[in-house]
Length: 326
Image: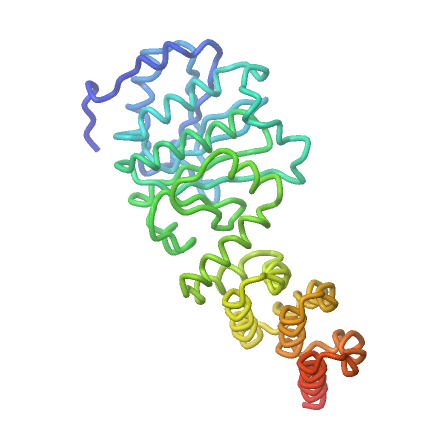
């Protein structure tokens, strides 16, 4: 790849006041390109410390920005075109002292159950991608439990199929598609702090509204608690959403009945819901899943004063007992 040094404005590097370490992967296909870019960086700033190592196999990267008191930023992308300035802003963020990060970046380390990896799929000519790269990399600079991976999907096309990426920017958090398009810091922090449950449920509801049942099913299967979270959505007030969820549970039961039945404990917590339509849909879902654990909760409903509840319970019990006899 050809570079014109005049295209690289290095003035932001004057804002670096503490050392920043960059490790170049000598095994990368773009090693020579990265080396030339980093040579320009080091010529313009004495605070950037550049080393090399050879990493291959599962540990893929073109170069890494790292600090013992901060997170880590891996690049499977070249910091060119619209990605040049976000790269420099990342260096500035890593150069700041640990106590100098703005409080709105939130000290997540005390609440994180485990380390968090944010993968952002970008295109170097996308202005929205540049904004999101600054955002996610600032989280890594502010918190040693967070790492980010910046992937140019025009260079690393395998990621398109791996995560079903159809547009950029797309943000993958701990292996799960979390955001497509632009988002803000508060939404990212909320997703990370909550384990992503609220955002996952919101996304599934959006996919139902857009009639993207296949994509919704794929993401439910990929999520470690997907069926349970889907089960909680049976209490949604909108009838159209509940009908979509029932259809998803039918498909999920056909594809992977054991996985689908992970929703049963959540559904049993909802079986005494005060809203009769929701109670009926919970009962119907338990009938779809045909899990004998539901029988104890369903049998008392045979005498329920509401006819729809009683009939629904009878049908669900019959479905479960018929499945046991097969």
